[in-house]
Figure 1 (cartoon, rainbow, N blue to C red):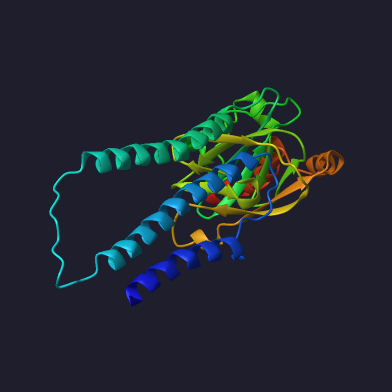
Figure 2 (cartoon, helix red, strand yellow):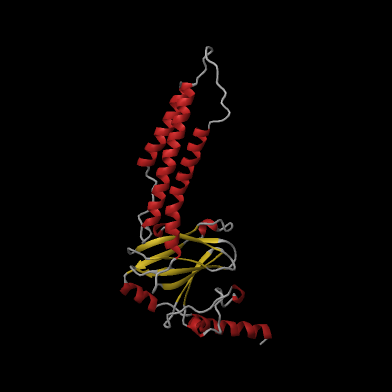
Length: 279
C-alpha cells in the first residue's frame, strides 16, 4: 500500500509543482508568443500522459497485489489494447508535432521589408554587423578573418565598407520593426539565444543560419550561448538593447563603420611594418 501512496503523491505533487512553480519563462519581448503556446500544449499532453501512466501503475500495484488464493492469467496478445495504445500514441505525437511545424514555418518565413543584421560568434565573444547607409550588408567569409578584420568582411565589396561593426559591444534594435538575424560562427558551434525573444538558432561554422523576430517592448536583455563551446562558454554573454526609433537612430549615428575601423587600424599596421623592416 505504501508504494501505491508514493505513486499517487508523485503524480499529484508533480502537477501542483508545475502550477505553483516560481521557475517559469521570462516575460516575452517579441512576436513569438506562438512558441510559448506550443510549449504549453506540449506540457499539457505530456503531463496528462504522465499522470495517467503513474496512476495506472498505482492501480495495477493495488489491484494485482499478491494474494495466495489468486492465480495470474497469461494473455500473450490483446489486439484491442494494442490498437488503442498505438492510435492514442500516434494522436499524441501528432498533437505535439503539428503546432511545432506550424510555428517553424513562421519562424523561417521572413516578412518582406525586414531589416538584416549579422551576429558573429567566436570563442568567447559576440560581434554584430548592421547595414550602413546603402541598407545592404556586404559579403563576408571566414577565410578573410585577419588581425585587422576579425569578422572576415570582404574589403573589395563596396557594400561592406559602410557596414556598422560592433565587436564585443551592445546590439541595439528598434522596437516594433521585423529584423532578420543572420548567424555565423568563426570557430566552433555556438547558439544565439535571448530568452525574452524566445528565438534561438545554432551557429554552424561554414554556414549562415538565420531567424527573424519583431521586438515588442523596449528594454535591455541578456544574450546567451546555448551550445557548449569550450571552457569560456559560461562567460560568453552579451547584451541586446531594444530602443525607440529615435534612441536607436541616435545610437546608430555614434557607431563606427568598417571603413572607419580599417582607417584607424592602418597607422598601427604601418608601425608594425616599420619595426619588422628594422627602421
